[in-house]
Length: 579
Image 1 (cartoon, rainbow, N blue to C red):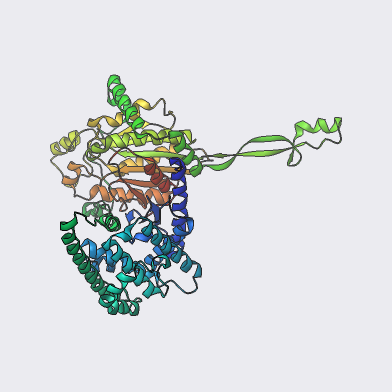
Image 2 (cartoon, rainbow, N blue to C red):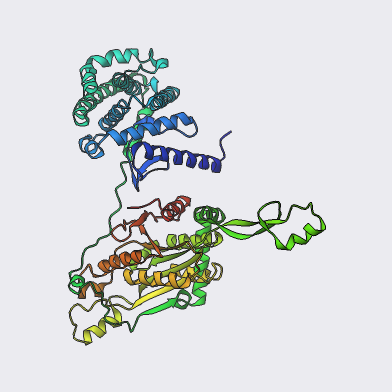
């Protein structure tokens, strides 16, 4: 019977966590982790595509996963990724052979004092070989050729024999293959400690094998004309599939730079006028009937996501909770004397249950403020963003965490009345910020999620999104956290800034310079972090926010958020993402 899907997912997560810990320890890198069964460094997929590197949860045992982990660690330790990418041929078939040969090279470099790793590597390779045979890929001429190549190359590099159950099956193909590649194989063995030299011979071997595959294809085509049969070599297609998914391009980095205007002013940020600045509750920005319609739409989006908010709450509770004294347990035989029970000792000198113990209960002694960039470019993400924020606020509240949801934008485009006042004043140079700054409270700390539902739905109101002045918004959000969350027992005050771009307000940039606002944002974050008391995290929507936030994560919001999205946020809050 097939494993139940949630149980399989939990088992896969457990295996990925164990393998991630092992590969981090072996490779000496802290930013490695598995996601969707593939190894990532930070947020970037590592395109190691040798077919035996990714065992199957359904078909392979734990020893296979240990072997694959050791193989990946050796690849990270002994292979220069940039050099490999530079030398790799563009054609898919040649690149596959080149990729496999490089993986076999690093596995042959396993240190002699790692006998366990050597055994794991052998076990994993034999498991892959058995799976290849079971899939009937030895029945095709091209599949048999590639399989034989992998077997004989690994045997030559490691000094170990080929997979014994298939030794007879590949003998004929090996006999045809060795005269054409024997010299190159000896060169591979001789240069396996030098990646660049080895790569030259690996490319020559790839050329030979691809030429043999072409010859076999031509022969098969002639045979097909006579009997109507074809060797589609589906296994070969499966082997190449991983290479079709190259390393994920790193997300773009937020544009940033130093402002000459701000530096000339001694780094003193200026505001031309605050007369039009405002702080508004989200429910004030739309009519009640509009908010009801938006709330209905948001409820639909949350339902479509199919996520269990209660389970998310439990995950956050585990992540954020710390033991705290909650009550006393009386009637104990040891602990602190309970004065209320001393009379029992008088009545019964043998009574021993005269003590009490302090009862500790895990509590999430922290508050979280979500600060949302409501600039125009975020409008295209407003539905997944609203669903994410709504579920996140609800899950955190159920986990016992205080939650505040804030937003920042402007009340008008291109400076509005502030810019007109500046023009009437003769347009003095370098006026500083020129905008009608608007800060929005979607949910404050004192309001429950249920009472804030209408305000959160206002995130779906498109005309809320205009321009953004990020630095002042971060200052405002940090000040609110310090003022509202004054409980001495709080251990963490966390501000999560969600944005998809650099600070942008047209009038300010034109009247000063293009980096005036982003320079100020970096100043604010540095100052707030030096002040302490508030942890500032960045969630970049398709954008790397590392120029601004020391701890940040790039989030994909192309569709409704799934469980993986929340796990990424948990990793950020838990401190496992840092740039």
